[in-house]
Image (cartoon, rainbow, N blue to C red; front, side, top):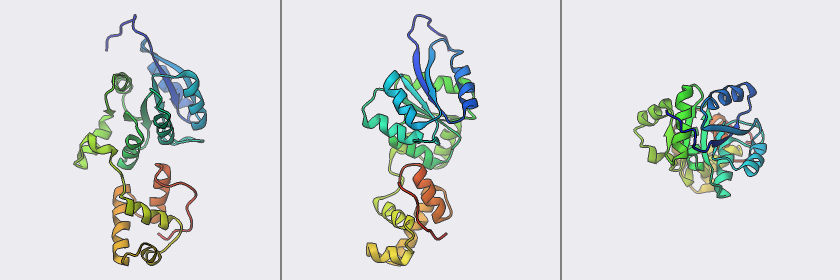
Length: 225
């Protein structure tokens, strides 16, 4: 990509809880003279403070960080109507994380194993208002017979979320059925759909993943597998 040296720099905030990863990303980003990392941090709450202080054009966010996750920061950016593009750069390549990121308002989702030039190109694309995915993520979307526009649809139905919330509190299928006035078989079907949508095989995994992508909050209770 050719650079126009008279063009203003795209200002970037970089948030990742691994300092070595941040250093590597910053190094290849700033090889392009149109890109400038104005701030970096390994803490989610500090990222919010820096976003307010520096008003970057692009926030490049990891998902798992202390304080706040990249998905929570993305949601915070949109709730506060900040004119900031969000590029998620994560090690997680499974669909629930991708969908949660776009549901929160992300503009792009790249896997950390993507080539540096692909990540740099993604920054320019989202700054122009495009939606971007790394090749790995695009393949996952295609394998699920989805279109990119489907990514911001709800991961779980309202009823499935009700079932999962009760399951996170340690309620058995029978107890959930009684509380929601459903048959036990219907609850079992909802649990199966939840496992499928989240890509998990147990209640514990379902609750932990739901918490990590912001579908549930608070510590899970005792759960049966």
